[in-house]
Amino acid sequence: MPELPDVAVFKQYLDATALHRRIKGTSIKSRNILGNSSAQKLQRRLKGQKFQRSRRHGKYLFIKVSGEKWLALHFGMTGFLKYFKDAKEAPGHTRLLIEFSNDYQLAYDCQRKLGRVNLVRDVEKFIREKELGPDALDPNFDLPAFRQALGAAQATVKSALMNQKRLAGIGNIYSDEILFHAGLHPQSKTHGLHEKTAKRLFQSMKKVLRAAIRCRVEPDRFPSSYLLPHRNGDRCCPRCGQKLRRTKIGGRTSYYCSKHQNRRH
DNA sequence: ACATTGACCTGAGAGC
DNA sequence: TGCTCTCAGGTCAATG
Image 1 (cartoon, rainbow, N blue to C red):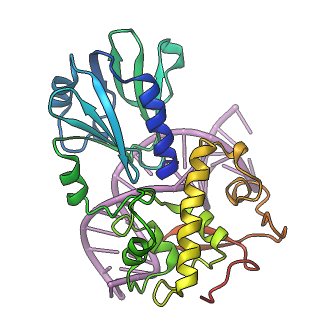
Image 2 (image 1 turned 180 degrees about the vertical axis):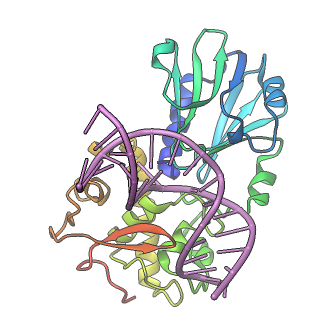
Image 3 (image 1 turned 120 degrees about the vertical axis):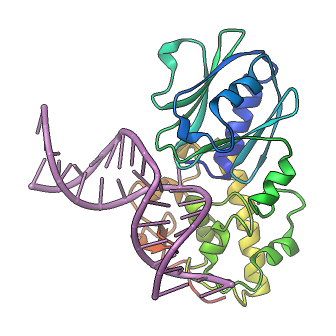
């Protein structure tokens, strides 16, 4: 699930629920979601502290803990957050549970355990070490920066968009959606992208990511002109009704409409 | 430099 | 019902 828009919605959710509450305790249900710190260390760092604010970069959510540290959450393919009071509401694959003094709890749920939780002192340094590119929705990430990020890559546009080192936040679902709106075939080469095409791609990227956040990434809220509600539904192009094509790029399933998306650029 | 593949993990859903 | 097979929105390392 969690690409940039999903994580942006998680951030809104966290900000509206779990900030400024005293942390009573932490329980780690699955150790292999822990990245750089032990369960003991994590518990020690969180106990008695509060979450003060959060920020997002790409698919990462960083939560400032009173004291020195930030909690860096990555959600893998299946992660999400849930804030609840009644144990009945606990999600089914809780890997980390944070209890607050108001008796509410925040669950980090990650069915496939591909997500990671890290304690970091310096967010910028963490981003540098992970070699993450600029966040796709950063206001400073403008067209020239976008062109520079794609660079003279020999890669396909789809894999370039998904490459977190080039720009951070876009995964399989949204790269398909962006390419659909830009009318570009996923196997188009990044190299030699026409000025006009690059601009169209850039504008589609911003538009799609913002729209997804506005819809709170609920498929039912997406305009039916978007690919997302169709790729797991009728698998037909929302513009022409033609069956969507399906192919593998970088090991990921990619959907596109062969009528509206072409390699010419 | 890029593409591809498998590993990491678990579970939902399809088909029989 | 129960079994097997395939697939899943991410990332990393090894290989071609």
